[in-house]
Length: 331
Image (cartoon, rainbow, N blue to C red; front, side):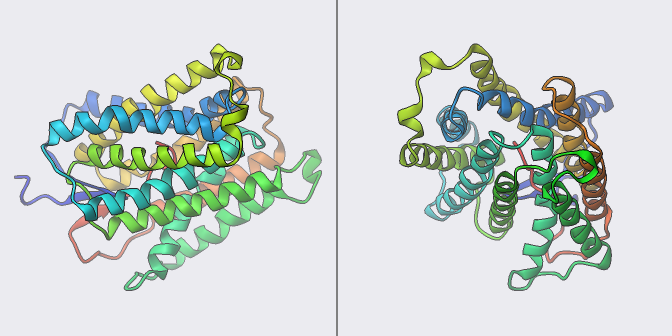
């Protein structure tokens, strides 16, 4: 089938033509990379914020991505972004990276990385609701609404009451910041779907990184984090975490994601939203000493069941011929 007759795959600000068949091994490797690399970012963010202030750490990561990748993909794509495209990527960069990833980095100074990944999984739930509330939006079906209630019921279980099942609850402020950050990420994703973005998805990511990275540095300065940041006091462990997040979490992970968007179906690609929290919980428990209490296990099952309901729910056809998959909660 020619590329002209195949549907595109739209994800947040991405619209990627469906390509022909690819080697099965390469597709499986790309899926494994998205599952493991993005699932591991939560643990490495926790390592980074051990000795680097959270907004400074996120600012280093994302501004570096923008400064390196923007000229590279601008040259490769031959695109000249328009003012309208810059406006979209600035707005979405601030929502996704400053409000979304910045909130995640800050919250992981108070909330275990595995728990943080579970709350961030609510991005898929928020996207359904926000897409419904926008002008001309589509009302979600009953299965999706059940998933929404289940998902936030699981989050409520994490934060209270105290000593439920013999385990402490999650820091309420950290959980609230994570929910708000997930809402901001979903809002940015919905916004980018309906406003002009560059044809090259990687150029668009670089532009978002410039805007979001700059915003993170401004917040770091305004909150006093820059004054508290002393590079000589940062441990090698934290520097290696930032390097991992830049190279594997962002560069390699996102490249693998683009690859599977081209060569697989939306329903299969969307499974990362279910698998990533499982990977994060396992790494937090096995490498970070994070407790897997009865409360955590019950809430995990509830939230992941909710995400699965949303992913597998039938969707009404959109106005344009495309398959929609949830935006990466952590890229």
